[in-house]
Image 1 (cartoon, rainbow, N blue to C red):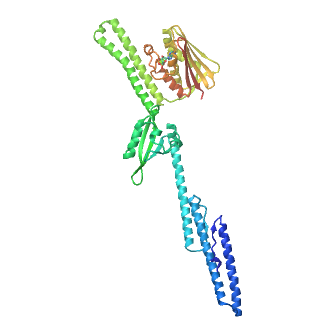
Image 2 (spheres, rainbow, N blue to C red; image 1 turned 45 degrees about the horizontal axis):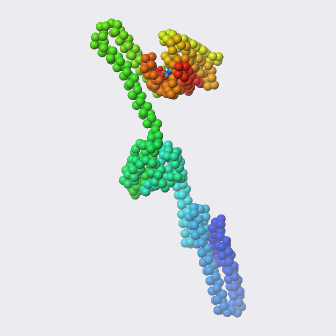
Length: 469
Ligand SMILES: Nc1ncnc2c1ncn2[C@@H]1O[C@H](COP(=O)(O)OP(=O)(O)O)[C@@H](O)[C@H]1O
Ligand SMILES: [Mg+2]
């Protein structure tokens, strides 16, 4: 019996104790058979032998040998079976060692190859699954997948946040149990039944304040048969608000332009109808026309300036500006307006605030708008103060008046375009309702802040905070 023919069987790294015992027993049997044969051959040589006994001993020896081989094969198959079970449980590290070159070894090799291929395929699938999960989690759109019966299969984090329910709570539930919107549920049903794509804008529930564009798409399998639907939710609230602001803006601009134009046209027609011959009346009408066209002009300039600011077309070249020079220049510009109402403008530059850092043209525009308001909404004979100081962030510029003030409910809205507390009063004073929006834009472009405090009949303080870098 050749050593190479001995089957060495066992699970690698975990060789079964059973197979060890069988191997030992087999070796003892083989040794016993050899010893017996040696004794018999000695008897034969000496001429004393009993043929039936010799045959019996040979038969028993051969039987034991085959039994041992058979046992080894059983053990091998048992180990193979254990290996397959381990593979089935996802453990690909087990293998059966076999030193014999036969069919069983071929089977063993094929199984090992299968295990390794299965392992790499599983690793690839897991990697793809991880990738898919990462993509789904980082999407700004909410994604939900439903099976053919309309039960939830999958849901990403964004969808959880949008709907306010976790996947664990929603798994296997029907669409309407997750999203209380019958219109959406009907579209989902339609997509499930005829495979048609659906797009709609809707709220996710009757109490929802947000707007969503909802895409409902069938999941078509390889066999071209629908296997469910994918629902993609995109929040379009901001777009809707912007659209609303834009259409409000267009409506406001049209209205603001039409008012002075109607007035101009009215006076021109009256003049044409004969008022032109009455010199004092004609003069009065022409003065009104002049004022109205001035206002139109201002309105258009303000609009153009605001649009340039919004689109970033004005370059923000900042530099250090002398506070006193800036104030003197602005006060000189507005003195005639203040004089008309007998208003005194006082200016203070506090210690350390000798200069401010910003775009000279833009800061001038801010101060003109604030000072104009302070004068416009002050009582005759009042005092308007403008004060520059240092503050934690850099510089603060305060414009203080003791005028009519702003009602508390309007305070938050005065920076909106065209918002005016008293439209008639503002218009009479030549206001466009755009002054404070321009101020806010400029200050924000300087990375500063603007605050307003006011009390009716007591006055208003507007504070601008400007950084120094
Ligand atoms: N200093 C102030 N005192 C009282 N009300 C003010 C003052 N500044 C602004 N407002 C109010 O805020 C509104 C918006 O201001 P603004 O944008 O400058 O437009 P306007 O062209 O009317 O001056 C004004 O119509 C007015 O009602
Ligand atoms: Mg103004």
